Structures are given as C-alpha cells and as structure tokens.
Image (tube, rainbow, N blue to C red; front, top):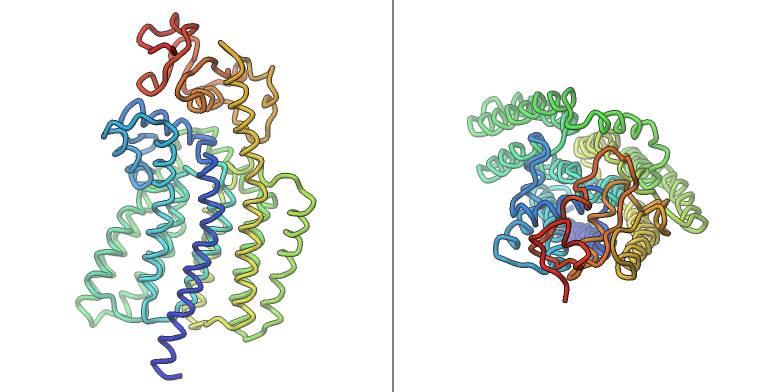
Length: 447
C-alpha cells in the first residue's frame, strides 16, 4: 500500500470513528436535556455550587475531576446568572466537555499512524460511561476519559515531540487526582513508560519525556492507594465491592467487553468467524430491549462505577495488543462496530424514558401541592429512579422560580444535604411560598 493510499485510509477510518463518537453522544446529550445528570449526587453538586459560588470539594483525590467538569457552571454563577434551568444545562456542558476533549486528543495521538485504536475509546464510553448514566457527574467518568489519550500517546510508534511530551505530562498530572481506580491504568502506564524508556535510552529527548511520564504515572499509585484504604465514605467502599460482584447486571458493559475481545482476537488471527462471535451477546441485548421495560436502576447504575476497575483495564489491554500487532479494521469488523454503536445508542435512548417519567412525576407533585410532602405518600415513593436522600433537592430545583412545596425524603435515612424543616437552599435563585417564612426569614416570597 502506498503512503497516499495509507493516508486516505487513515482519514476515512478516522472520519467514521468521529461520526460514531457523535452518534454515541446523542443519547448522552439527550440525557443531559432531560436533566438526568441531576440524579444521585448531581443535584447536590449543582445546588452546592450555586449556593457556595465555588467548586465542590468532596475528596482531595478526585478534585481535578471536579475542576474539569464544573468550571463552566462556576464561571456562570460568578457572572451572576440566576436562571436555574439554564444553569443546569451549563453544568451539562461542563460534564460533556471531557468527552469532546478526550476524543479529539485521541485522534491527535494516533495521527499519521494506525487509527484502529480509536475504536476502544468508543467502546469504553458505551460500556462504562453510558452504563452509569444515573450518575453522570461521577468523577470516575473523567478518569476513564483521560485514560485514553494518555494510553494512545504512550503507544505511539513515532518518537514523541515536545508538544506530545508536555501534553502527556499535563494529562498524567491531572489524571493522578481524578478517581481512586486510576491505580490500575497507572500501573499500565508505568509499565509502558519503562519499556519505552528502555527502547529510547540512546535518545536524550525521549529519555526525558518517558522518565517524567514514568514519574507522574507512579505518582498516581500512592494517591489512589491511600484513598482506597482511607475512603471518604466507608459505606461507599463496601458498596463498591458489592458492585464488582454484581457485574452480570451490566449488560451493556458485558456486550462491550465481548465486542472488544473478539474483534481484537479475530483481527489478529484474521478470522472473521471470531469477530462474528460478538454478535451473540448483541442478540441477547436486542432481546433485553424488546422485552424489558427498564435498564439499570439508579442504585445499580451507582454500582457500575466499578467498571472503571474491571472493564477499563480489559479495554486498555486490548488496545495495547492491537497496537503491538498493528491491527487494522476490515469490512466485517467495521460493519459490526457500526451495528454495535447503533444498537447501544438505541438502548440508551430506550431506557432514558424512565428518568423522564420520574422527573415529570416529581414536577407534578411539587407543582400541585403546598407545604411539606412526605414522599411515602406519593407515586415516586418506590421509584427505581429515585435516591433516598436527594428528592427534596430535586423538588426545589424543579420548582423554579417559585417553591410552593417541598418533597420530603424518606424518614431516618441517616444523611441528607439539608433539613427542609430547619433550612432552605437556593435562596438567591428561587422564591418560596409564604408557608416557609417561619423556616428562614431571608427568603423571597412568591407573588
């Protein structure tokens, strides 16, 4: 194959992968449009940023994830924007920001080389990020997204230039404080850096680049290990373990793992029959779409953050293997890839309707009642989309601009972000019914 034809193939394949990235983005953007990113801690992060006019500071080891996703919202708040629906979408823009940056950097990392590794970040978004779309604000999303440009820069066959080096160092430095499960990718990055350092030992520039990348990769290990052993929440630690044991629940992740594994093996041995094996779990997923009324529940989606420890390393290893063997896609693998992405996007759209229904139910409840509303007396008391502690916050946000009623959380839940009988939130953004004047004298009452 001539260099001209190689370049043509690279650009056509890269364009296809970019279009597939945009296709994957559609269900993600739809989830943002129906405010699914307010699920779980999402609404707490939103209200905290609005009231404090600053980033959230939950865990030192995850802080860079919050900086990356929250800066548009913090900036909007500091400029004086008060419209909560608009601020909610500004927050969504921040959450989508690392997806765009990550994939564009992946494309940059494989420039003038084999573009097939761009398949694996796509599989990762489907299998990990979209599997956990009831916790779209999770810091693990950022860690997973940052893993890919780091890996692809380290795997470049051509020597890295200084721009590559600085980009790699910045990504690794940020990566070190994104999420605790970064410990496994960091081990992989360290191992690759050691190999690259040995191979480039006669090249001073490459020695400098890979030495610093090795140091930064290794830096992640003690940070992650310390916060694994000393977590912010012990209950979350036990929940993480149980999430690993429930991996069979994560159908999209299992389909993604199957696709990545059999596509890699099939292309190595040039056996289309092996690639076609990945169609079997896709068929089971079609059955799920046809006969199940919902995907993961909110609680199960929270547990799927464990995929950053299980599925992500598998995908990283598949990528390394594909680069080692210089695998290139063929017509069969490309067609199955398109089918896979299309199917998983449809699945995400299919089940997003459950959250949309829940959101409308909460809006109807807070708009047709007055005062305090015990959630156990409402239709959402046992909703699969509900969390035990964030319903009051959701009700206030979705009551904008006038809060006439507050949906109470279940009693005796142990922790909730605020007690609506003693304090009120978002006082600079919403007005409250006169009923709540006794709770806080500093509120603006509705007309």
